[in-house]
Amino acid sequence: MSDFSDTAKLLIDDKEIELNVYTGVEGDRAIDVTSLYKDHKLTTYDPSLGNTAICRSSITYIDGERGVLRYRGIPIEQFNRSKPNFIEVAWALIFGRLPDHEELGYFHDALTDNELLHEGLRNQFMALPVDAPPMAILSAMISMMACYHKEFLQLEDETSLLGAAARLISKVRTIAAFTHRRSAGLPFIYPDPNLRYCANFLHMMFSLPYKQFEVSEEMEDALNLVLILHADHEQNCSASAVRVVCSAQANLFASCSAGVNALWGPLHGGANVKVMEMLEMIYRGGHRPEECIAAAKDKNNQFRLFGFGHRVYRNYDPRAKILKTACDRLFSKLKHKDPLLDVARKLEELALRDPYFIERKLYPNVDFYSGILLRAMGIPTNMFTVMFAIGRLPGWIAQWKEQHFADGAKIIRPRQLYVGNPKSDYIEIEKR
Image 1 (spheres, rainbow, N blue to C red):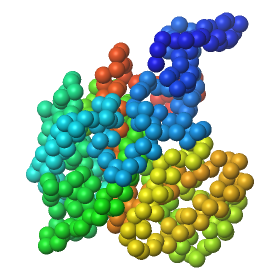
Image 2 (cartoon, helix red, strand yellow):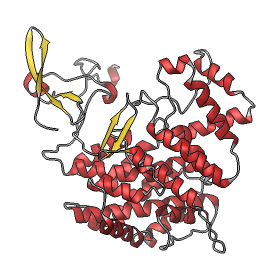
Image 3 (cartoon, rainbow, N blue to C red):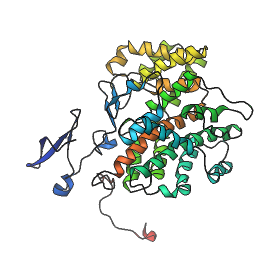
Image 4 (cartoon, rainbow, N blue to C red):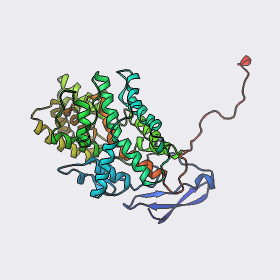
């Protein structure tokens, strides 16, 4: 973003205040209100920050009206190739460019070299209840990595950032797989350095000491796509949480742990779980999709249609389109049908031609098909949000890097509009 290209005038109490207006590379305009309080003792009131840009960013661009999503300027559809590569996308998000052959090879080797957990960290699993929430474990383990990798608590150049990023991105899948094995009462399966990133994760999830899990090419590609499509999404709740914690000069591990905790919320990372529960309810209950569409439009009915609509998109979520096609490819290879996919397809067909949904611009979002794909791979529902976190980790690292190295970066400290008691006196307890 260049210097301000225009000005806006604010009229208050017969006083005119002139504010700079900045324009982004895609034509988005933002009014600069940074001087309002300092110069005029005024603040802006914007609950949920839905109309406030908290940073300048060059990582991800979204146009919700047109259904556009780009990573570092590259349309998300271009990553949907015959061999999608999550690691390549992770590098691009963090370092701002697609890696060349040498850089990609180096990054791949760094991930392989750092896939094991320190034995002290691995032993922490034994102290956890077998039914502990997977996201609680993930958050705690990422935070505890700071205890075993203290050399990365201060990152001041790209080399040290690469070292920390490789450890986080590699070890997060080991932590996730061990979390599943612990809950299932299964022995831990160590990573196989001969396998690529996604195949290695599925190996750790599902192999047995006497039988290695066979990962089909279609399954590996589908998991790569799921992770790529979740890798970043502008200033969402968890990305903003990472930036806020980072702004206090907190280390990368602490900041990404905060991202996990924000993602844990059902309004953010838990949405695909709600979709699967809904589809199960419809199928097991013998409900007709037509009945569910009618119920979703009835204000007096408690039924909710999950997986439609988005805070940003007012068009078809481009990620959902890609995942829908990925479902077709994977299920064609698996040669078995999932009745939940049939239910989802029928719901989408009905909604996309219903005036109620068309007028309100309620289209399928990324959560509508991602759970069905994960279920086809054998991922249990309680691990869905963990899978989201694995995919989102490169985006969090990129957001941390941008915040940490931003010129003139300050601690993020919002204002408030106080609506409590006016000045009042303390009353001794005997007189209350």
